[in-house]
Amino acid sequence: MRRILSSITDGKGFDLVLVGVTMIFLLALAGLPLVYNVLLSFQEVDMFNLAAFQRPWAGLENYREVISQPEFGLVMKNTGIFVFGSIAGQFVLGFALAIFFMVKFPFASTIRGVFLVSWVMPGLVVGAIWGLILAGDYGVLNAILQSLGIIDGTVFWKSDPRLSIWAVTIANIWLGLAFNMMLLSVGLAAIPRDLYEAAELDGANGLQRFATITVPMMRSTIGAVLALGLIYTLQQFDLFPAITEGGPANSSTVAQYWAWQWSFRIFDFAKGATVSVMMLIFVLVASIVYVWSTRAEVRG
Amino acid sequence: MTRVPVPRLLLALALVLAAIYLFPLYWMYVTSLKGGSEIFANPPTFWPRDPNPAIYPETWERRTMGTFLWNSVVIGSGVTALTVLLGTGCAYVLARYRSAWIDVALFVILMLQVLPASVMITPIYVGFNQLGLLAYPRFAVILAAAAKSIPFYIVLVRATFMNVPRELEEAALVDGNSRWGAFFFIVLPLARNGILVLAILTFMQAFGEYIYSKSIITTPAYQPASVGLSGFLGPNATDWNGIMAYSAIYVTPIVAIFVLLQRRIVAGLTSGALK
Image (cartoon, rainbow over all chains, first blue to last red; front, top):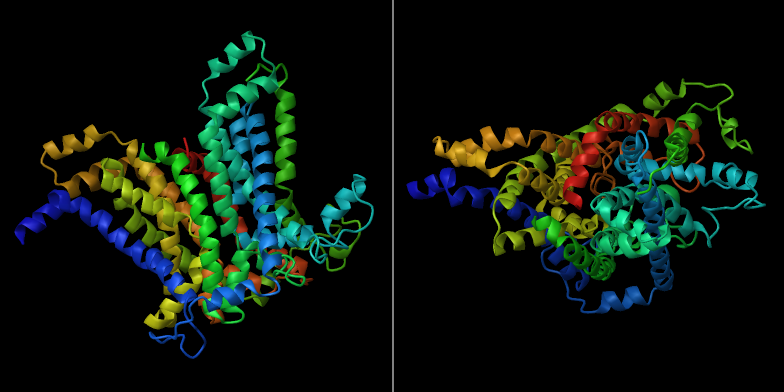
């Protein structure tokens, strides 16, 4: 007993306690729910047996029913648009801004830091503001686009079924843009300056320097940023209830919002778990890419 | 990259870009000060004709924002306390050793970091319901949200601990300190700034938390400000100056803290996320 105690104050036990308590907490509140989620997706769950520990087995019935829903295809398509639209927008704009802020001028890093304010704002507030900006008749985005001559009539971003998913995507690009820019800036800063000077002496123009130095040197950063983009886009939930509530007619429902609706609007927790498990497959692929491309940095 | 003859011009361009990017924030404050009919004017006015700040106390009263914000503070503080308590020691150990076991632990933590809250809420809700935890809704939300923020906190605080020289700790051990003594009196004070910044970031995230609170807390008296805001939001919302006043009251403290600590937050975030 005394040996265990002294090990906790002064030996290996000290490390084991610090890591062990946290790991038990995380496994109980994240690992266990993950397994439970898979279990739920194979069970029959309704309001009556919600609190019971024994539930009827449903086999693959939940999966069959989810896939045969009329909106299944639409939700998958929306998720695809939302994910790829968001990642493309955030990455391209973020990269452009990151390169711009690498040029030396006064207050460059301070102004760059200000962009990150979008990242600390509650998602619901961001959704509320964009809901107002994207409004049809009185929205300021329409007014600006009209005065620039880009559009003629009024665009109903939120209520046009062809555009509603793009309304949420625009808001999400704004939300994630700063974070992308910040991570890419860190990667850019790590490229040795003399590589560029040598290329310039050899007569390479800006585009050639970008293609032959910046992109290859940034490969692991780009991989991590894209994987994180996929992860954060699939985590994005708050914008949906705030801007469109998935409507009109499910035209802006994505998998993560659909899963929540199954559980907390229809109270069919098994279907909610089923959609979640389907989503997890994508998340796992993204996280493997992410872990792979950051392994060197994280291990230190 | 190349030497630029006119840094002033670039500064001006940078300010324009920042202004465009921060326009939504400006629009929130401006709209909150507009009168009822001015909001629906087409084309919209970019400066309120008759700024009326009376909407702020009115919204505060009508939407019972005192209760909502208090609950946000309770949830945010609970999550932050739990995260710092559980995350700091773990991050320290993970920073001190290199072995296959440490790699496994890091891998598990990174994988937990990526789980979407919208995926986790279904099993957590059903499980909490079976355990009777839903009777303490704010505590339940704190547990669930802390599990979400701890992995992120560990990864970044670990980077801070990596920068604390090992020799200082070894010297303390030679001087007769126990491991606990060296940890509390030598290592922690040296890593204080990084821990503080990440604790503040954790608080900000938990302060705006929505999905767990919305799903778990059904009693309005225990709901945080994000759920309170969702009550009068949605595709058909019209009470825009009320919504924007509510949003402004909600985010202004966060934005103010961010502006004050901007440099440190950015440094803390970029040190560990990627190099």
